[in-house]
Length: 291
Image 1 (cartoon, rainbow, N blue to C red):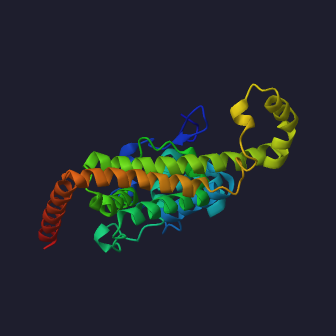
Image 2: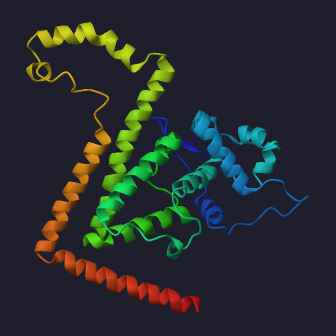
Image 3: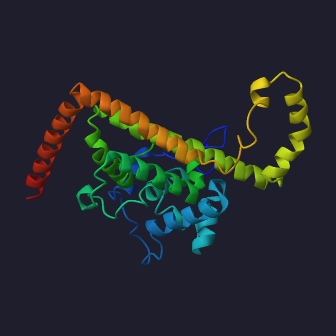
């Protein structure tokens, strides 16, 4: 565990969840509020906002309780009245940024209807996540294998499942669709982020990096040892080729083939019907509970 309370892996990634119970209290608004002393000029919202701003500008490593106290013009110990440490703060930061593209409020019923076509929903899901990773590249440094689920994370999952329900797939398969799309987006985003980081760390542009290898690569291609590589067209590694668009279209085409297969044997219709019945039943129960 790092000195600031977060858990740091050997590959530079980090996890929050220092005190899961405390993180959940803060995420869901059930924790105790600071009550002693004069009226506080701080708030948990301001602390999380400042932490995200620092991470966006300088990376996750720059976020510390001491740094945030400087940004907020307060003593470091004052921050601990709101959040136990960086580990729990990372949980709050993650939930906040995951919720940025989503409508405000914790009730999914307040959200606008997703696109009627599940293909458009997957397209929007992928583009939204890619944009989020571009604005907050430090997200790629957080190990999200065991994310503490807050309101934004659950709201996002609820909206995604609602948008994909018409595919008629089994529930585990719907989760797998989300995982597949997110993994594809994260892979491309990580490659781009790593390339940008390499430029910052080495001072060499991509062009300068590859130009340095050119003489060796040319000799290798002329040696005859790599006939397939030597036969590739000149535009094979062109930066103008859009790997995101190509990959996303292929993913959607693959899902289309599966949905068509399920529709042909009637499996999709039965799954959609069961899902609709369950959703209707749950909505009725929630409505009755509110009354």
